[in-house]
Image 1: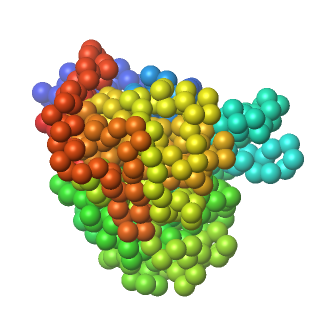
Image 2 (image 1 turned 180 degrees about the vertical axis):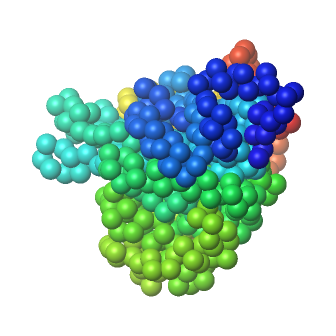
Length: 554
């Protein structure tokens, strides 16, 4: 066993003495030591139940003959961090999670790992660690939150809550109405109830093959989630016995499957940051161009919030991620020969699976659209690309042309939006919010929600070198690369410049001549860094561009 180097032989007596200090018995030391990476904390709603999930996983490990040992991983709640300096610390935790997990696992020589994440950067961070460490590993999320219900019975969720603030500023919702959303949008523990980033990544963990069926969709409050955790704890022992590692599972074909499922589900645009970063740790490169190729032939089968009025509990009832994958096999869009943490191939896993609700999961013969939920746009404004969740864009905004309203920070933009300074037809540009320029590439959920909440979602576009929450809807185009702080053309946009967006044809153009842009570049001076000390300053020096996954360069 891998752990023998800390527990066998006379020379390891000092190590064993410390294991005895933990209260471990000789019998427990003889068994495989399984690291339980628990993201439990008391500030993130998606993680407040992970203490119970952790205990269930440990019970499963013990039942199958292993010795579970828990250690923690951090997690940020993007919703709580939203709209202030805290959001700069969201994306950057992905790498902290990966690095700290690598350190703990290597220092203590576990034989296998059960990762217990649930939220936006915590899930990809642990997937990055799994790929990097390459020892038997399986994932068990905490599950999604249930949808809320307003006083009048309408179902609701976090994205509606953010848009309610915009409606209040537009004068179409009073304080009592805002309070109704505030008290009812988030009714339980779990990752927020739409196809936002956390749920997107938990679903894609199934598609990659690193979690059992149900990981992304079984609601957090359900007892089925506890049973799922026990089954996951038992399954890791089989993976250790068979020596099935992430490197056997996280192959180029598995990432192709994940991107395909991503397009069918209509996942968060943040997956365009996370999948390349995870693949990079596995020695696999994913490009923006590959994403468009996959999107072009993958039908969009689901419209969960914010794209529609259905939620994760509905997807679970319809058969979950596996039912979506089963639909995709009808057009041979997946490589089902890949290995998974079940110890079987995806083809074997999908036997007997069916779509139980064709209103929630459209059949491939009747999709919402023939192309996937995400599009990568390119043009002189974003030579290296930018991304949009096209499944959540109003039909009238799939092609748009209008004058730029330029802001050098989220705060400047939101102040103008709330003051009624943005009009139908405008293209809001928020720059110097990229990985380096932010630093930390903040999510722009407040500005986009304000635009939609004020009734401008069908007439105003927003473009940024920052990123968007999975809860964002509308013509919200992020990840503009190169970013402004790196001298990208987004830094050269001036108030009133005309910007043309054509999502169907994957195009974004700043209607300014090359000669004029060159003159502007000569006069451009990069602003002073917004943060000059601490982790964010180090991050800014090491981080790559968004089109490369905002990975840290060595």
